[in-house]
Each structure stands twice: as structure tokens, then as C-alpha cells.
Length: 442
Image 1 (cartoon, helix red, strand yellow):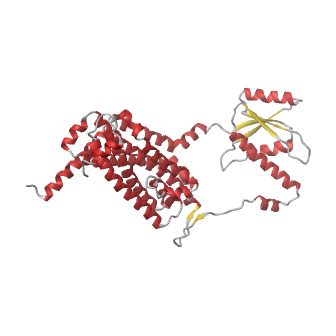
Image 2 (cartoon, one colour):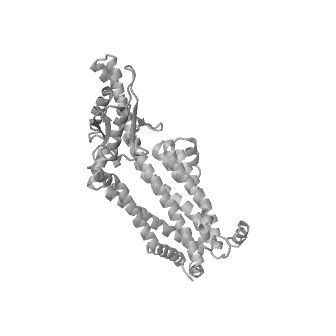
Image 3 (cartoon, helix red, strand yellow):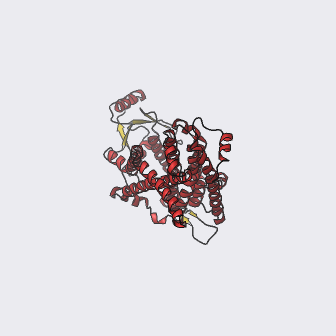
């Protein structure tokens, strides 16, 4: 007769055996290792991309734009001086290069086209002659179909030249001109109506926005991608008939929750690798100087975001993983898994897109409603916590609904898994599945 402790330890040993087996099986898989390495490499490139681009562009200099000397000098000469000024402490982005007047508009344009063809200039501008009290029109021509960056810079410069001419013609003093052109300063801050805090500054808001954006992507990877691996693993074992051997040594429910826990630890390990790769690359000297120039301070991130990020990762993962395990158990072939997973895929993608596109309006009705729908809560409520100020009862209610849904769906998924793992052939209908489930108690 076994003692109470022996009866408790034996099932737990079986459970941890499944967890250990699942982790070893996944960590040894070449596909998992290769995917992790590729994503980590892409992360390295993404973090260092500004530095890499700067190395390629360091000696390129400003883009050269041609014009005809003496052509509406009241516009071209101030424009040339404006473009020659450094931008944000760096070098000028555009440089006007003058060409001699050939005596006619046609000959002038042919001369400029020849300069473009020989790569002396990237494009050229033509300024029209107009009445004295009007501003001339300017045409920019180049071989490129879309030169939005150059035309945008030219438009800004021409607007400044026009503004200067209008102010000068109005007879204003230098002091009046300086007062008129001085930018209006406005400071923005996010306040909280539930406490007396000063709220978040514009820098803190920008940092929170970036952090929430990255976390929503990590939540999607950790919740959905890892959950789908569970369904794939179960279906593969079932199609290879390995499941028949497993159920003789480990109860189906211990298999299900053991696989869910094992895959959760694998997913957590994978995310940890990505975070370490990100932190190491951000801490490199060239990226440190870039971050210091942006005046970013990670200490300004609200500590609650780290806590709620972990909470929503845990709850979101167990919500979707139980559903994925149930679906994987009723599919006999891996070829049919994608079709069976379509409803879960749509739900998870919908939550992810609500989180990403809701960042522009985190207090919209759609985001508020979605934050109380369990399938969307991990994304929508985390977005609201990071960018707005939801009441504590709203956070508690959304988490409560999410936990209740996990328990209900976990119980249903357990019954489906218990019967589905030994059902082969075509995917069973709901009627057949319900009839088989009645024969087992969970």
C-alpha cells in the first residue's frame, strides 16, 4: 500500500519527465536552433543598422543639384546659402552647383541634362521668371522617379527663402523678424487622474511608446509562435504513432500540461536570448553614443510595465497553448494542422494588430473593449497600461476574466486532448468529439 507522499511524488515525476523530454526534444531540433540564430542575427543587424548605414554614407557628401547662374538670382542665391548651412550640427544635405548661362532656356536645359548624364549632379532646378510682387515657381528634374527627400528639402528651403523675402519687404526690424520667426514652445505631459503625480514628460512618453511596441512584438512571439509549436509537436507524435507508446507510460493530461510547461520554458529561454543579444548590441560604444544623443534613460520606464509584461505573457501563453494542444490532439496529419489552427491564428493575429495599430489611439473605444476580451487582453490591456492610465478595477477585471477563461478552456481542452490523442483518421466532427468526451472524466 503506497503512502500519500509516494502517490503524490509518482505523478509529479511523470509530469517533470514530460517537461524535461519536451525541452530536450525542442532544444536539439535543428529547425529551432537555426531559427533562433537567424532571428538573433537579424536583431543584431537591426540594432546596428543606423551605424552600418552611416559607415556607407560617411564619405558620400551632400547631393549636388544644378542650376543656371544668374537665373532669378533673388531666389537661387539665398537658396544656395540656405542649403549650404549645416543641418542639426552635421553637414549640409544638398549643394547647389552653378552652370553658365548658354543663352537660351533650351540650351541651358541641355547643359544641365549633360551634367546629370555624366553624374556631376543628381538633378537640377529651373526657376521661372515672374512679376516682381510674386514668388517664382521652381521645377526639379532628375532621373529618379521618386526623389521625395530632395524635393522635400528643396520645398522647405524655398519656403524659408520666400518667408524671408516677404518679411524683408514688409519693413520689419531685425528684432521683429526674430520675434516672428521664433518657434512656439509647448511642453506635453501625461497626467493621472487617480493620483497627484506630475505625470510623464514627453521623453518618458516616447520611451514608453517604444517599450510597449517592442513588448507587444515579444508577447506575440512568446504567446502565439511558441503555442503553435505545441500543436505541431503533438500532431507529429500522433502521426508517427509515438503517442500510442507515450500514453501507456504517462497519462494524457500529464502529457498535455507537461508539454505546455516544457514549451513555455523553451519559449522563455528563446526570448531571454533575444533580450541578451539586444542589450549587448545596444551597449556597444557606437550605439551608446547614439542613445545618449537621443537622451534615452531606461530607468524612466515605469516598473509596472515589466511586471505586467510578465503577467500577460504567462496568462496569454497558457490561454493559447491549451487551445493549441487541444487542436493538435485531434489532427492526425501535420499537413492538416494549418487549416485546423486557422481560428486560433485569426484570434491571435487580431489581438496583435489591435495592439500595434492601437498605439496611435490607445484610449479608443475599440482598444478599451478589446482589453476586456480574454483573447485580446494580453495585447490591448498592456497597451492601455503602457500608454494611458486605466483604473485599477479595469486591470483587475480584465485579468480576472482572462484567468477564468484559461481555467474553463483548460478544462475543455483537457477533455478534448484526453480523447483526441487516440482518435486517428479524418478529423472528428464536434458531434463525434462530444460523444467521445462523455466517456471520460477530467
